[in-house]
Each structure stands twice: as structure tokens, then as C-alpha cells.
Image (cartoon, rainbow, N blue to C red):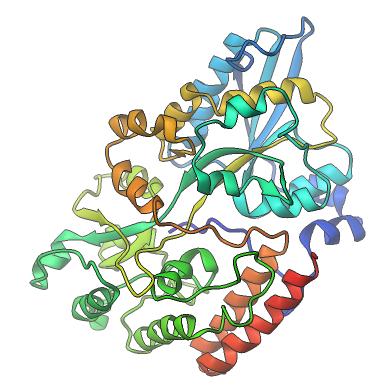
Amino acid sequence: MVQMTYKVKMGRWGVTRVATACVALGLGAAMLSMANPVSASTKHPASASASHTAKSAAVTLQFWSAYNETDTEASTMADVVIPRFEQLNPGIKVVSDVYPYGVLLQKFVAAAAAGKPPDVMRSDIAWVPELSSDGLLLQLNTLPWYPATVKGALPGPMATTEWRGNFYALPLDTNTQALFWNKADFAAAGIKSPPTTMTQMFADAQKLTNTSEGHFGLGVDGTDIWNVAPYIWSDGGAFTNANYTRATGYMDDAGTQAAVQELVNLDKAGVIGSDLKGGAGAVSGEAGFPKDEYAMYIDGPWAVTTYNELKPAFKDYGISLFPSGPGGSASTVGGEDAIIPIDGHQKADAEKFAEFLDSPFSQLAMAKTGQMSAFATDGAAEVKVTPYYAIFAQQLQTAKVRAVSPFYSQMDTIFSNELQEILAGKVTVTKGLTSAAEAANVALLSGL
């Protein structure tokens, strides 16, 4: 699937944070010139609530995101959501700037350091603790409109907006990954149904593999936590303690080691495709699945939209819950939050727009593009509009949140790099995970 977690590119055990590095090295101006966005502006109105009063003078808000432009995400925001907001809020115009995901965080930090942040940004949930701890975000839970706006939000998405007892973001959309399986491949292999247990999934993957034809039974889209966590959590493993302050005893525990060893074994046997190790020529699960390169892989609801828009559309697949292991069926909570920079120049109007993004109109409009609502109150209407969301909604009931820490990116990079070393045969599973846990401790404890 498309990677949903930004990974800091740094030395193997480096724990310098992106925010600190960009400011300390004076890269603000340089970063502001990176990655020219695609902009779309339209008309809209203030938040649907009557708690705000629109200004008479014309105001232009900058809204930054990394919405997908190859499907309908970006266009729906620009052509449906924003016009409606402008209609409800005369005098406020919103310009939607779409940047590549890989540069959005750094660009935001640089813009904030230069005193020119956007008015609102759609942030990966993993970035919120880091930006909050650096004092870059407006605290929202003290604002009068906040309680009513977040009422009905799902617990998982809400947890991603909190930092040390206060809330610095609005839950915007949520997602998780479920198992995609190729119906034709399963039928050809004599497999009547998708796997419901991890043991069955691994056995099916071996049966579905034909390396001479470039056909792999399983795709695992990288060594990062977003993609590997379902295998580890479902096998009874972990990454940190409940407070996200310690990795030793969790990232290297028996369950984690068992899950990683299974992935190593499957990779050595040629059952997992090139997506796990990555590198030049690697084919992602989302790209390889419709081309019959992968018989199974995990992905999110956006993949359905992508497959529907292929010429011809790819529809010969099923979507099931991630198979259960000793830890149950545990996938990863993903998604994005809406944030308002503390040094924004038009915060009152930015609040209106951020609040509107959580309105039923916005949530259901974006649900049609593969963006699941972060609000339980929109769930029934959402599934009615987009029926295939039902399986992802069910998977979210047991999905887990990644470490809510400003140093999550460093921990993720440490784990991912060490898993690459393990797959390359440079270290054993036990030694590699022990080293990763020790290094992750340094990262996590540096924020205390």
C-alpha cells in the first residue's frame, strides 16, 4: 500500500528531530522553495456552526495537504468541500495547496520557522505529537466551539490529537488496512476462502507463490511500523509500553521476535515480493496486486478507488479482516488530523474552516473518495454511501494506534533500518530487535 508514515532520513541511530534540524540548520527559506504545490481555489462559507461571525473584509486562507491527485481526493476537496464552505462564509476564500507527502512535514516546519505557515494543514496523525511538543500548534480544547465539534469522534482518531493532556488537532479522517486477496488466484490454487488465521495466511501464501512466473503469495509494503505492525501485533508482539516511553521488553519480546522471524522465513523462501525490502525496481503491493504479482497484501480503502479507476477497472478481489493470531486481528490506525499553526495570521477564520472540515457535509463528501470519517456519528451514512467501508469499519474496532510520541518518526526509522539488516542476514532476529529496542529507548526518553 502507499506508505502513510513519514520516515525521517537520517543516520541509522540518529535521533535528531526534523523540526529541530530544520530550524537549527537555517533551512527554512530553502525548504519553502521546495515542491511547488498544485493550488485550487474555490468559494465557500464559514463553519456550519453559528458560533462564529464572518468578517466583512475578504480573507484568503491557505490550506496545505497531500491529498492524492491521481484519484478524486484533491478534486473533491477543491471542487466540493471548499466551495460549500465559501458559500456558507462569504468573504472567506480558501486556496488548496497540494504537496507531495514526502516533503509536507519539512515544508510546514520550515514555513513556521520563517513566520509564514499555512492557515490550516491536513497533517499525518504521526506528526501531531512532534509539532505539538515543539510549540507549533494552536491548542484547541480551550476554544468554545471545540467540545461540540469533537463530540462523536472515534476514540482511536481522538487519541492522535492529544499531547500531554491537551488537544492540538481535530480528527479529520481515519483508516486502517485489511487483507486484499485475488479471487482468481485463490480459485486456481484450490483455496476456497480467504485466511482467517495467520497460520493459514502464511500457508496459503506459500501455495500461491510461483517465483518462476514472478508471482508472490504475499506483499508486505515495507519494513516500517505502519506496514509491519499488523503482523507483529496480531502475533502477540508490541513496540512500546502503554505510555510510549519504553521499547525494551516490547520491541524485542517473544511475540515480536516470532512475527519478524516468520517474515524473514517467508522472504528467504521467495514468498514475499520485492515490496518488503524496497529499493530500485521494487513493486508496491498496490501496483503489483492488479497485475497478478501479489495474491495477497494489506491496504486501505483508498485502494478500492484506485482499482475502480484503472482502465479497465480491476474488481476480481475480496477484502477481509487481517487474519488473527495470538494477539487477535490487529491492524494499524491511520489517518490525518487538521491542525492550525499557533503563529497563523488568520486564526479565527482558520478555526471556521478547520471546524467545517469535521462537519457531516465534508466528512461524507470525502468518504466517497476513500477517506473514512473519524466520527462514529457519520458511520452509518458513510457505509450507505460507500458500502465497502463496512469491512474497514469492522477492522478499526480492533486496530491499534502507533506510539503517540514526538519521537515516533525516529523510532520508526530505527525499527525499519534494523529490520532491513535482519532481512539482509547481517544480524539475527534476536540481536537486531534488541539493538532496535535499545536505540528506540534513547529516542523515546529524550522527550521526557
